[in-house]
Length: 306
Length: 318
Image 1 (cartoon, rainbow over the protein chains, first blue to last red):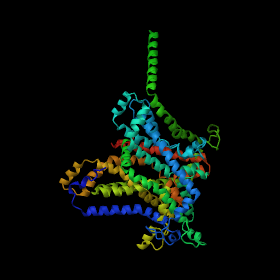
Image 2: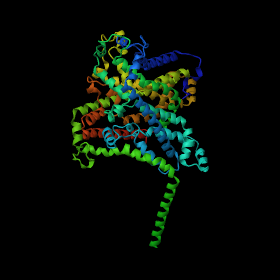
Image 3: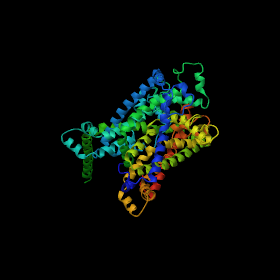
Image 4: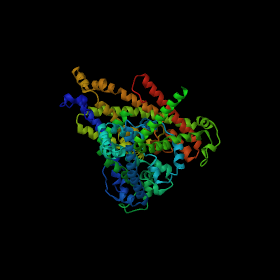
């Protein structure tokens, strides 16, 4: 990635109109990308009543943490948050371990099922049984109305498997061979030698899986929507979004506020929605910038070796 | 004589099984570490294909799939006679073509622009920001997009300020605008992410090509047009193939989350149709038929695009 300045190298000093326009356009892009987030953050930190006067601002006009206080005291939201954290942690650990283990076996040139298993997984990238048959299968296995439906069906994905396998195949073969001579078995080699060396690939796949788990709402909607105890943060946010969507155009917020007077201690659907949105976004914001180096490499690896 | 031959072949067979057994024993651990996942992928990815049989039956919930009444292709016939399905098909194709064109143009443009940035720190910073929307869920994204395009949102405020409109409009409730709104939303969410792969390819271009062009007096646009872009053709070809295979995959989440009753006729895709009939109305067989239609078309498109690329002499997928 670092040699990307191909055409500019020899004329490093001159700052032309081309550079100026290019940079200006990129700054515009950043503003367009960021504005919705910054605006949402500001709304979530602004007093709800004040927000009803107009919500196009990037800095809270009347600062408060009350919106966050309300959503975190809301037992449904809080519980959904806990379930989201749990599924992300457990789902990521199990998925990454299983993917790495399978990828290791597929990277062994002597392994007899190497080709067959690779093919079985690669095919899944190009077709799917479709929504209804999968739904029926999950139902018949008794996975509906259970936490495990968040973990098991997505355990090993073909793309992550390819990323991991490509990385392991790039490690020097002599490592495995010398360990074999020392009498270490394949599982030992995987746990003690391959896993520690795979950290860049593990970081990439962990990020993909964790983000997928954290962001997922469709499985909750499809399999667990009748059980509030298994609801996730994204699904609760979806419900708030849909009720807001119903009243699109009408001024639902002002009706909500009619009989209240203590201005600081009020919430509106808009301010609550903003706070939940931020709660669902912040963990991602804290994680992905630090893994950038890894996932850029992983993306290229998976994309090229397919 | 015959006996001898028989015996040797039996011997060879026996030794072959012996060799196989020996290999199995040697690779016992590798097998233990991988075979459970063969079971896993067969159950979760291949077993649902068995459920395709439902499309040729009148499936009732809870019944055994072999004991249902067979109805042949009647569900498929009903599907193609359904005006709603034709409409849904139109929406799916329209939105995926828009997504395809917008997606390719925007991410290649962004990659070209980033490739021309000379300050590495600035480039990294722009990239980091541009990945952000990719990592958030469509639920969060839909929330942000609806806020931005709401009546008192920033887009309306800007359009009013610039005197382009006289009074605020709800762009997300305009049936004719919905396809384009989905296209724009997709670009906003994925442009930075999709540029990664092009940037990586650009960094592999041999710098001596640029140097030679500079000696010949080529400017920066000229170098972009005559060196950077042509070097990307194989990559663009392979990504195009992959995307043509997904032409009936216009997405599900974004439409489902951003649509409202005003724009239903333009917003519903095949996936939403399947969900509506299959889950909400419990017409499992009919919805499965619609799903099969989609899967089969996908495979046909993918294989033909692949063949086409082969004939054109480009790299291909399989």
